[in-house]
Length: 505
Figure (tube, helix red, strand yellow):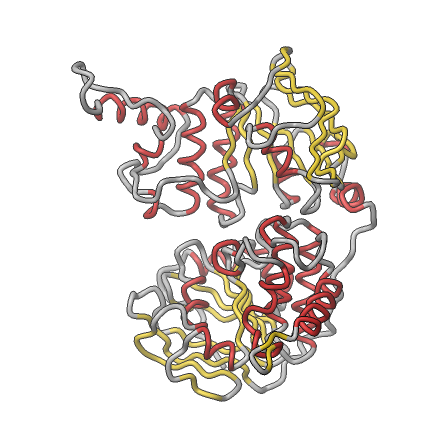
């Protein structure tokens, strides 16, 4: 049965068509993947289907009947729900309370006060129906990324969801955590729920989907049966070009000079424990561990966002007595944070303002900003990074995720860094942007910089790193030269409870 049918969809912002004459269908019980480069129109389509944007032309049919979706409430009412890349949970609410956000709470017979027993019984029933193992007594801010994802999906199913849109659902999950999500998707489709699966991860697309729709520049290019296509064809359709291969570095060019050296580093909150590692000039070092292993916390401590309790940090041979973000920048250390919208960008400010914010002194003199030099520099970097935008004065919040990440990297490069701390730098960007970021980091390493690279995608770490450290329970349990290392070996260390091979210099 055709669940959703859209025809001739247009969405215009000013003179720019975000969507132009888009038509395709979604069947009940299928996993329908939606792919395209950042800025291709995927997010705009989702916002139209969920009532955030009104369409400018075209029609939407739901189970054979033409419908209007004027607001998110109308979308949920007909049976369309979305789990966004940025989780929409109330941090201080328990799982039970979050499940009922937007719904009418059951009341006592007197209609005064919440009937907590009935509410919990209904919540536990739906949790049991879908086989989700999650403690609903926990508040959302204490839940892990996969628990938050499962909670959002359960909330959608509380509303008798018939089409569930999953927007980059595995962006912050490890492979093992993603497996639980995939099992839940299987249970949902078995009962007839359709899934619109939006992801840049090709392996997931080919594993899960029945059909794939490709968007490019706001238009539907094609809809294909998954079993009848391959990755190379998809990328050609997405980019209208052949797959660009990242250039190979001819061996590890790292020198003996250490650009970063940690010795026994610990934090007051216990999130980093007696960590010792090093990164040499010209080297990309991977840092891998399961969620909660302390990857982000270690980068934050090096950069000065988290207070250390012992040990030492040395950058380019200089010991940093008490790291702060300002001192890190002054010493050539830049952080590409996991949450770019929250921690790396001021969304209401322009591309120009975001890029030059850390280095404004370079463009100022005699109490006056040298705006011509600033605009020229920003324009050059936008061209260098291939930032797709109306111009340097466009608000960075209006850009696609991939273009926002390019601005983050350009801002970092303006600081003339010697060390990159990269926390999930390719999270939720398209395949082509991912390749561009990989090439950029390899080029910076070739110039003599050091890179400490964190990713939840183990294969990505193995693809880009010269050497890697494995974290388990906030400690380094292995150091491995990336020469024939397998994912099974790395995961073996992740699940160990004692130290594997001792780190060596």
